[in-house]
Image 1 (cartoon, rainbow, N blue to C red):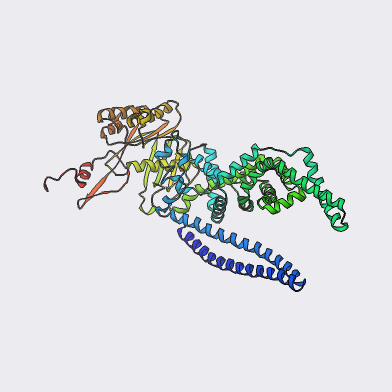
Image 2: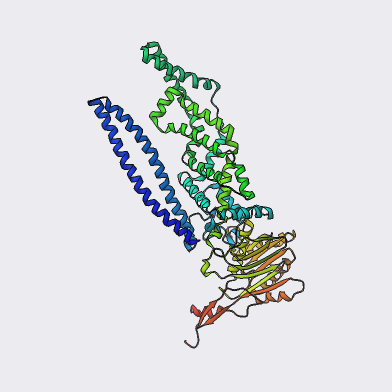
Length: 596
């Protein structure tokens, strides 16, 4: 797949060069035509009226060239953004993805510890790695799914089928991401949704008398203007002047209300055309999966609705040009017509507008879930089991470079797993590997494994525990509180997966072993899979306790030429080696007596 992205990137780079040449050509021709217009006006004034006609023809040509040039400039902007998107795909084959600006920091929450413990959100996180969403709703929907909201087998299966279908539509997902990034570059998507909320809040309607006057006054003014021009009537001229003054006066009196009513439309103006393209691209696709078909149904009126809003936006844009706005207000009561059109649009479409943007967000989130299958050779779509179990074949950490990833087989059903091993041997990485692939499973995404089968369980983690000085909570007590949440949930008899790294490391060995033994005992039943890493080999004795269903696993190291090596492979049984003394000697804390 990497070659596909590289080939596409090369094509877009060549296309950019051609578009830049074409754009430069249009700029030159536009300049020459503009000079011709000025020359025509000059010669029309100094020599013959014929040149005025030539200026008018050149003006029409100039406007045509402007329109065509705008199209070329859009193609150029699209081409550059597509290169950026393709480069982001290629960055995921290296560690360059860790420089992506959107880390999802705002989705970290103390109410969801796995978000921090498993690197789901934050720097070098799963979210940072897979996110392709640009809109506010797309980012939030992806975060919700990675936070396991909601989580049930039917919903997971629906999302899986949708992600599988999007995997077959690579061009569409790239195109959709490009459009989303262009729209967000014009107006930040959060401001778009703030503008939508603002439109909901402001329901100002012009008074009934103005609904009549906005037609009556322009008619009277324009008719009087024509009569005055043809007949030279002073009465008609007076009526015309009165009409102009009255319309300007009314525009000034209602300016505050009108401005606040039209303000949200101004904010949306820049990005509306791109969102329209996003809806059109969805409409043009044929989808078979249930989830994506539901999205098409939800956006059934979106294209006509966005076009109608774009029309209102175009009408309102006159307010940005002082002279044009002054003229249109004086002759046509322009602002009142704009407000009336906006209110009509609100009545027809405003209540369903958020649903349309939710469709864009859902498709963006689904596209994000497909990323792993696009940048990894080893992946599969997990099977959801009705049992409390996890069975994996060749499972790897999804955020590590694939060429250096060590893959492990692992299976457990309603068992406590005590994992021992020396420092840096891979225990913590294994817990995160299991945890991240489980999060991907429940979100509906493919996982980094050849095979993956898992039951629906609530996930609890105790890995990166920090103290809270302001509340007087030590690291050890913070861990106790985290473990208590697991024990309390366990009493509900609901299925759960508990991942505990270096259990009770903040206290002495006697208390640690006692606390760990009791924790494993309480979490040991048919509804719970508990994985505990530890340096306390005494916990391995729980495997022979008839009251506890426990199994031992370990990671090990080996030495060659006085150097330490790790194979990062999980193996059955307890660890038989340690490396603390070797590491202490290596950094010089323990002196080798033979050399001292």
